Image (tube, rainbow, N blue to C red; front, side):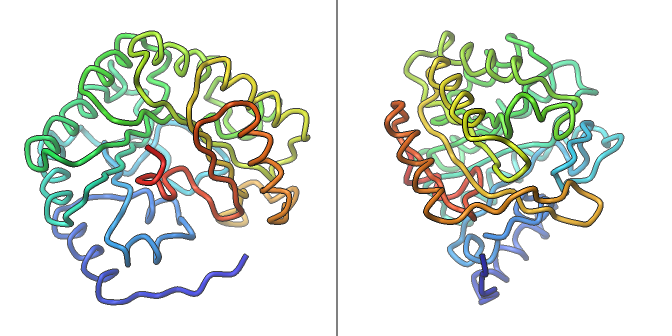
Length: 273
């Protein structure tokens, strides 16, 4: 799994534009290996609600701690950046904000509305946290009209106490199922990291659970430890094994599957709708 960084003019332009607008991206904050390819193509996954997460997931490089107050001007800056980049498809995610009564749902909703105002033809994918299980928050976000609603389960339930100690597998599954109940025609999506110590049968069971929740799209990628202080990689899967996971997911009925070592949640999102 080797990549050749290419920081050309387009990469520098995207980086400067984000900095000028005081915007964060999960590409930068989480150390995504695809950042050079995506920035060079003029795309980025915008990170809202600050750059500090209230959860303590042991796989993630994003800052953890007490976040700052919500920036009420952020949705407009996001929308302006989407317009300036000329995006036909925008991906927006956030840190988890358990400190907020609605988990940040109102900000997600405003971001969608502002992008629609500045770029009416732009399609939008939202990668949301679990909102602490709040159906009201989920309803508000779906009501804003995203084209794809994404929520990652990340790993198998047995590993949650180790990998995602403040998250809950069943809560995430319920969110996926509730999304379809609220809006049956909405395209839903989830993602899995493998290489954390899961077994094949556990991965298949997660895929089955997601299909039972009517999840449409699944991404499967190799976990890479961002620093020595994070969880170590338990196993590296080869490309052939990722193809086998893709075949299994397709046979289970997912409408679209991305499965490869460097696949991340927003990888090739525009081609998945």
